[in-house]
Amino acid sequence: MTGIRVGIAQPTISADARVNGETVRALMQKAAAKRARLVQFPEGMLSGYAKEQIADWSQVDWGVVRAELEQMMALAAELRLWVVLGSAHPLTPPHRPHNSLYVISDAGELVDRYDKRFCSHTEINHFYSPGSDPVVFDVDGYRFGCMICVEVNFPHLFSQYERLGVECLLLSAYPVDSIFELKARAYAAINCYWVALSLPAQTLDLMPAGLITPAGIYAAQVTGRAELAVITLDRDDPALTVPLRHARPWRATALKGDIYRTRAVTDPRSTNRRSL
Image 1 (cartoon, rainbow, N blue to C red):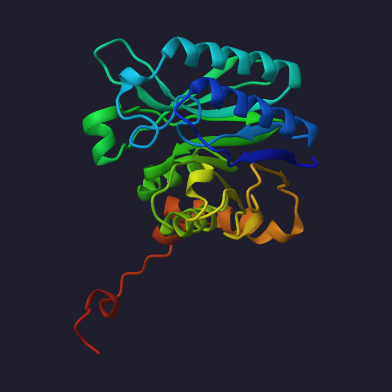
Image 2 (image 1 turned 120 degrees about the vertical axis):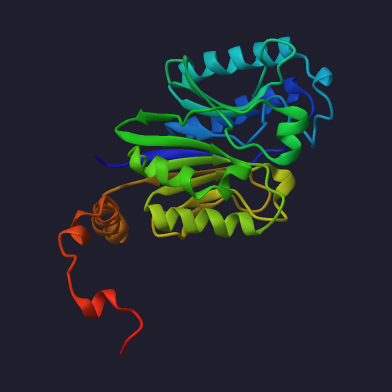
């Protein structure tokens, strides 16, 4: 296998779903022209993000959001391109929307939706309903998982995706501090998988969007005012032999505990920790 090309977007998000839809479709075209098989967008890309573009859900025309989403699905089929798109997902009133990532296949089908499980204090009290499940999907033999923004603060979510066999975690966000980037790099290195950060242009002063390798270093970043980076993920890259071929299998074995339980000793000098 020669790898898979992934596009990571860093667009400006507006309060107008029509404008956001046009932006998404233009970047889908650019990603496809660069031979990407999947393109990722930030948190809240289509609907706008609560606390930023959206002060109240009454501002959102859900019919427009749906119409724009349907156009994206049709274009995904035309381009043979997978799309992971951030948007609020409306529920039955009076329930608040989910903060979601739509997973659209290269056949133009909505194959899954990730709903943010750990919302911030403001989100859960004023804007969103929480989700409950992880989402994984495969494209060309590579396994992807989804996560959103403040969930970067919950290590067990990253470990869960490692156990689910994820090779690239798609972390779409609207970050509020620069330490976010350091956390993402650490999780990539600890779990030995790629982490793709798709962020809005509005947070460029904090960090650029980009792809972090299983070694915890950047393979690519969206430079300057560019809105898209396309990079190849290749599990056969010799530079990633240690994290992918050695560290990840070893850590998985270590976590099972058998290698330690079978080597445990019965020794008074071990059990007595108060003597020399």
